[in-house]
Amino acid sequence: MTTIPLPSPAVAGTGPTDDLDATYRKITWRLIPFLFILWVLAWIDRVNIGFVKLTMLDDLKWSDSIYGLGAGIFFLGYFFFEVPSNLLLQRIGARKTITRITMGWGVVCVLMMFVKTPAMFYFLRFLMGVFEAGFYPGIILYLTYWYPSERRAKAFGMFMSASGVAGVIGGPLAGTVMNSLNGVNGWAGWQWVFLVEGVPSIIAAFVTWFYLTDRPQQAKWLSPAQRQLIEDDLARDRASLGHREESLLASLKDGRLWLLILVFFCVIAANSSLTFFGPSVVKEVGFTDPATIGWIMALSYLFGAIGMVVNGLHSDYSKEARLHCAFAAALGAVGLLCTSLFIQVSPVLALVAQTVAIIGTMSAIPVFWQLPGRFLAGAAAAGGVALINSIANLAGFGAPAMLGFIKTQTGGLAPGLLIVAAVEVCAAILILLFVPRFVAKANGK
Image 1: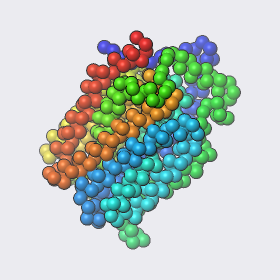
Image 2: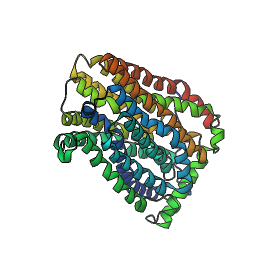
Image 3: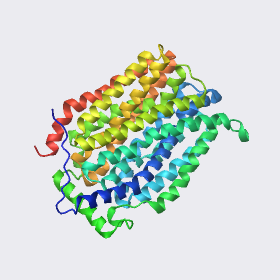
């Protein structure tokens, strides 16, 4: 069975292994917790409409179709602005880029509390996507400046598990705010959610400006010897990967890039469906209190976060990424299939199945991001990662819109979830059938 070979770290010329490990631990403690917090804030501000939907639609007299379109239109902003944002990050650095992004999405989140019409809802959701565009692929690119290939899946997993932790925090927080502040100052509970969850992002933008360091060479919090260790190790990693495409235009002609876009499209279709309609599944099986729904989703996302970290750690340990991604996607598809089958039969089985779907789908994501670096570098990596994420995230537009339409037409989510399950299983099939071919090519075999 063909697997992705990840280069082993060479000790010679990079200093003692213990010193190198200690330096990477220092980098991890400096960067990952802060980036983790930013992604928690971003994720909460992105998906809080999945919870406010529980009362917002009734207050504004909107249908599930309006909600589904608004939830998904966020990703159109992603599509148009992710590549330019990542190319800008490569040019001006992460500190300036992430500060701008964080400030933008925080302000828009607060403005969402004043939504009255579908048109305003669509515009602000699109604007949220515009501002957040570049954050996620930007951090993926940023971490490649600090970690060699064989250490990235763990770093990606720890960072990306923030989306699971955001689910743990965001659900109970939104439910509690909606229940306890409803009517205060004449505002509905869902309006308070946007305000309470948007302000911390605005504050975080100022912290980012003073805290973040663009490159290892600029890290005054590392000693000169530690900076040299990291530079030598990253140089060793680049050499071990051999020739990689650095021209963005040339990479667009490479079928491997478009294969990864298709794979990630299928994964994101499932992830966005679970994100924006997970609370609706919980409501459909019989739970109506927003706080209770929030806690149920929190438990599911806690398991999802654990899955991301464990799958990333095991991928690094085994130096294999292909099967870790494919099997996780397959698990997510099975979970979605079972959710659609049990949603009208057994509330307990439906919620367990949805949790399995969240674990599998989320666990596939950090390992997936090991793949583009096998054959892309420089501007091609900056633009390629953003291109993969932006085009694939169009599934984040289509899937929620599709689910909202089907829910409006049929009154239930089961048929739509079945379609999403079929889409996600395609990701596993594509990886198992085609990924070995481009991996061999990427390594010059």
